[in-house]
Length: 265
Length: 276
Image 1: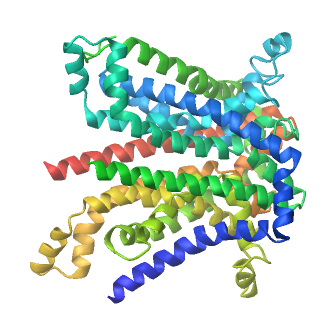
Image 2: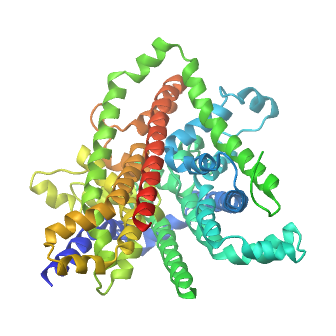
Image 3: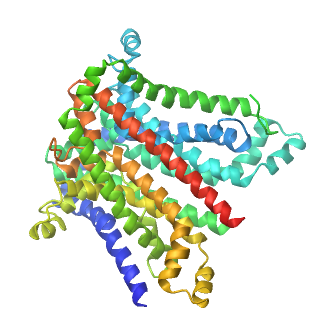
């Protein structure tokens, strides 16, 4: 009994000090000057444009992650080929690389002095310090999520149903849409939840390529940073509280999905 | 290419995967090394061995290691409690463990700073007993512990779930002491997952930026991490300097990635060995 209480006490204290109290602090700081200041910060024009840009990035990064994830999982889980484990390691690379380095390579590639710089100047397309760069950075840091969910899932499920469908005369796309997609839909959804959380919250990589142009190339996390560095703490924490809500929603959706999948088996 | 598998679609999916990874990840990352290699050696070494850069490696390595050690001690206790001990609110706490994954790093950074600054709810008490947290290396360790915690807990939980309590009971009936059960049964079964979780937390900490820069105070030579130094150089349009230090940072990530893959391979082989 004593041991049990000690374990619970330690866990509650550790998770409380490191996770729960900081979360509460965001809300406390956001409402420090009352609800009026809180909602004023959220309705600010620059805040709204940051929210719009973050949603745009997420709306592009999530489908990219799904398409890549399904293709990669199909190749890796359904076939044997030399270099497979190396390929899987490469899929993990964006998680191993510092977000700052991810932003740096985009600047080296698309910046004015970058490898594709002359091409950028000639075509008049701006990537770095513009929205395309922010979208690319977001895709870079978030695309592996769906693949990482689907590869182990599809390996575990095996391909007997798909082979049966093929013997019965189904075409490749029919097998995919009618057999595989229903088998992996919860896995895709799980990956989508994690991918959207990362896409909405990415800071380091996006910060490097954005140039922090207010109202133009600011995402929500970058807007939080600017407000904070201007000592506009109430507004910074108010906007941050939106991201806290997204994070809590992510955790709830993730737990609900885990619960559902566990109960189905 | 020779491959095994009867279903269609290999060419399409494999080709697309390789093309995507090359265009988005492999070519851009190799470009960084290529650019760093095209600097002249003297120039490269001057940047990479500059006292401010070396101090940033020291701060980053020391704080990442300290945070990974804190997580390697607290993480197993948390993971064990959440799997083995049943109490009200357990599921909620378990869901909360993923918070550092779900919360944007910038928000984690300002939230931790608000709590651990001298006027913060915990920071004020710690400062009163002579332990300032925010704007010291200790603050960086707090942020990196926050970021690394789910790696250790989530890596260890499946291993703890696989651990059959009846084996511990059998050992106890056969006369093993608590210490012997811990030493001979629990530690060997959990060690690979602990090491993997430790390495994952350490690797993540080395490159961490968002959660660190607010709480660290960013004093050159004292509390400036390497990721921030890269950003600072970029903001000063010192692309050569950013490239050189970025290459060092990337090389460190590669070394750790291969170490982690090796660890996972080793632990998979060990579990297969015990099941056979």
